[in-house]
Every structure is written in structure tokens, then in C-alpha cells.
Image: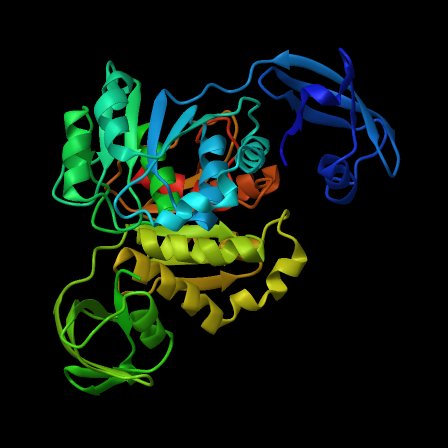
Length: 235
Length: 235
């Protein structure tokens, strides 16, 4: 945890918070915080800054916070992601939050197993928990927006063209395609497929919606690694 | 598993192998392979190609293999990595093998917890197991070389300068440094620090050995994510 994130409900006054949950445990056991210590903090959806530890006992900690710094900027990106397997999904949520993706649209794909849609990791609270871990890691206070579009065809045909408009539309896909571009400043809409990749029908529909295939070389990467590699290369 | 890797001991003739271990289970349970199927295979340290499934029962599978393709090229890179925590170490071994790093030197650092050096995941068999998972994922047959240099100072002062010579020497480090370069073709020596980063003394010693700090922006990434992001950006 490189940043302590504060919820609205933590505030007892404009500059005072009390924490009682895993954040208290973390401060006690990992950081071994003491009265007088200064910590980096951020208000979820708001500014970041520092906090002074005023009081600490076994049940709660009280902090005086000063929030005066903007969070780091997000990437100019909408990511369309075929739903990964549950264990991978949790790590991907952390990774995209840490890397500054502002909006992720989870879609179905032919090679996504139907059972993946039943995972409890898609519950709003479970998603939020992983996103917060990513923000705490990277020092950011703004949650990415997660949108679930379970039906691929109506999403790609009816809604994706408006999202892609005015952006560079790309699909990460292994094969004889142009290499993924580097160091862009323009806004991007990027689709990333499931393990095993998109099927040709899906690549065709994505192309009609304005997303052109690009590749990262002949090595087949896990979804989490491919997400990180594509983002690091694009921006 | 996108590639079935074959060990020397699997061969019963120049073009025949018999498998009995987790690879048999994987073929039965995940791929639901049948006699006559064709599979992608690679000989560890050698060529890649295809195999025809000749015989399959509950205890073993026999394949006829044709090995006629070179493995994908490796990155022109030596990676010096501060030993990550054990759980992260396993994933990093998979990631570096998948991404084509040919040589990783694990070093100590002030912020590496001493207990990390006791992990069973540093045993040669445990390292090899994770590397093979990465190679199977990415479709590569050549194991990276893993070197353990537990003492930082003698390694960096006495042996690192010769490794860095004739390469671009870089250290990934957050701070007011030049951005990490993009799309290189030249050989690189890249050092990546522990969670919490290198200490200034270590950065100074690495600089004397020819490694200059570069940064990836203000977000603090987990080691595994930083490794992937740096490689995707450099090459």
C-alpha cells in the first residue's frame, strides 16, 4: 500500500478521519505506524495529500488530513476486454487501475467460457476491492469505470462505433498484422481478446466498428501480461 | 499450454516420445486430445515443430514428432533483478520466460527482506518449473539462464561492468530521470529494483557500473507489472 485511500464514510470532519478496518491492521502490522507519523493519503474520487497520525489504539486510528494534490492523469483510453477467467480477472482489475486506465468495458467472446460470467468477482463490491488495491499500489485516487456488456454483437454493432469515433481504434491480435504503435498521445480505443484470441468473425465485427488489428510479436502472452505490454507500448 | 515441451528423457527414438506426467493429464483433461490429433511441440533447448498423437491410454501417451522450426528469438537483454518476494518471484519467472528474456541475474538489495532468500522457489527445480510454464505459454523452447548473485556490492563493482560493456545500461527507478527509451534494437542491460525501490547508494553503484536511471512515470507498479512494462517499452 503506497497510498492510504479514504472513503466518504471515514470522515468525521473536513480534515479528520477515523479508520477501523484492514487499513488499521495494515498500518499496525506492515507499516508499524506511530502517533506523529505522516502518511500519503487520497480521498476516493478526490484529491491526494498527506495525513498526520493523531491517535492509534487496537480498535481505531485517527488522522488529520491535508488534501491538496491532484491525482495522476489517466491514460486517454477506453479498453474493451473479453472477460478473463476469474483468477486472472482479479489481477487484471488491479493492473488496469494501477496503470491508469479510466474505463474498461468487459464483453463476451466466443472463447470466453460461459461459467466465467457467474464469478462472484464480478459483483460491484468485489470489483471495487481489486480496483482499490491497484490505486493504492500506484498512488491514484480515482476509480476506473467498469462497464459490463455481456452480449458481444449488439455492443460492437450498436454502441462501439460511437465510442471509437475520434479515437485510434486498435485490437491486439496475434498474426500477420502491423506492429502495435508506440508512444501515442492521441485517444485510443483498444480491444484485448480472451485466452485463445478472438475468432475471425469477431475481428471482422470489431474492424467494422473502427478497430484495426495490431500485433506484439509471435509470443502468446497471458491476458494480464498482454494488457500491461500493450499499455506500456502505446503510451 | 500453447506448446508441449519435451525433455531429453521423453525420447524413446529420434522421432518418438512417451509422456506420463502432468503433460499427459493436461492433454486428457484440458485439450481432450485423441489419437490422430496434431499438437505443437518443442524440444527443450532445441527446435520446435509438431507431433502426431499415436497412442493414448490412462497411463501414457506416445507421439511422433517432427522438429523443424527454430524457436522465437530472444530479447537482446541481460536483466538484473532485485529478488522479489517469493509469491511474486514465481510469476516473474513465468513472465520473463514468456517475454523472451535470455538471462536474469537475481541480486540482493537493501530493501529485499532477508527471509526471501530462504524460499524453496529458488531451488533449481522450482525455478525450472516456472520457466517452463512461461515457455509453454509463449511458445518458446529455450530456457532463460538464471544466475544468483546474492551479494550486491561485489557483483555490481567487480562483475557488472563487464556485463554492461557494449550495451545500453539502464536502471528502472521512479524519480526525476529521463523517460525509459522506446523501441530499441541495441543490446541492453536493465536493472529493476525491489518493492520500495533501490536506495541512493545502490543507484550510485549501479551508475558507476554503467547503468543510468530511467523512469516510467509517477505511478508505482508492482515488480511483475514493471518488468512487463519496461520490456514492452524498450523492445
